[in-house]
Length: 123
Image (cartoon, rainbow, N blue to C red; front, side, top):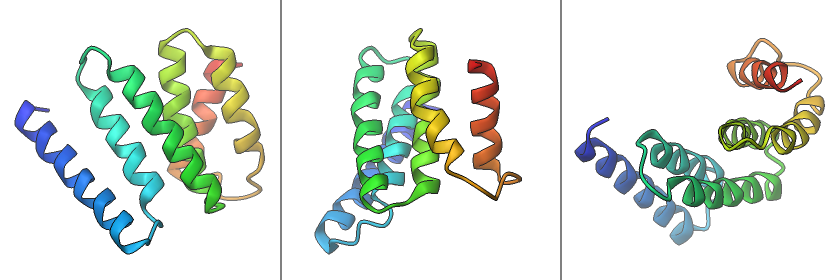
């Protein structure tokens, strides 16, 4: 991703977050925070991991407040992958395992397949 593409993507996400805040329609808030964190991690920018961690935390809080289990799972997979890269495998497992265990169906979806693949790496 070029620097220009990265900046354009971040600007678009910021516009989405501003709209979410202005309209008090928070349905996409968790996903926007998650996507912003992923964009920051895409390039190897100093300090990106810390900022991404904060954004993932916001995304988890938003998903949980909305009882949006699928979004919570997406965030947990991304945050878990970050933690694996940081050597925090146990933290990743402790975050992801209970969320994944809360699903009784949909195991053919991409989100649950990705979660299972990460769990398999962690166990």
